[in-house]
Length: 214
Image (tube, rainbow, N blue to C red; front, top):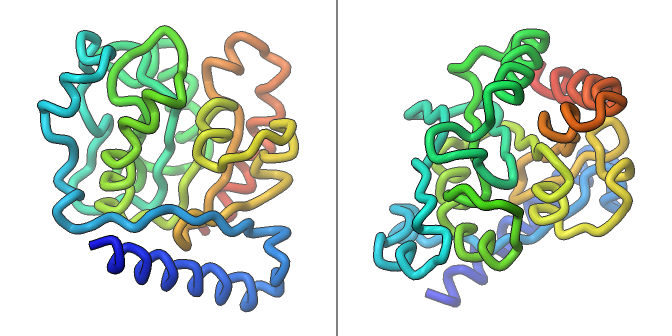
């Protein structure tokens, strides 16, 4: 099994290199290469319940796969953690998200909203995220997306494994590649609500994301 994972991860790395070469980005300055472990087919079924029960967040259990559209989604929007057991975002953040999607013309059938943590938490913790990441990777694999969009500082830094100033990670500045999927980052709806000055930056990023979907 480990040998199979290594082979698949190596193959995905070659694909990233080929993508960089075709785009004239051999130094991965535009599409930065990121290596993630490949998922075995039997792992795509998600977590066994007994594994989740060992996590302290189990008591805040949330549903898996918010806005789940069986089949496929062109773009996956990923947040760090769900706001509550019933919704990935609170009402104000969800309204902002829907307005953003409407402005970009991205219908619900073309998108899905996922979270790294599968249960609500007061704060984002990388240790908890590590416990959930196989489930998230299986979700991403099941959708076959064209793009990934990472909402928020915590989400982007965890998924991209970067500690750079966040303005250097944003979609209007850089494009990344996770297992061959173009990946963009921008501020989250919650961050925009807490700091209205960020809305302009997010709109700049979303225009780049929208162009990538055309």
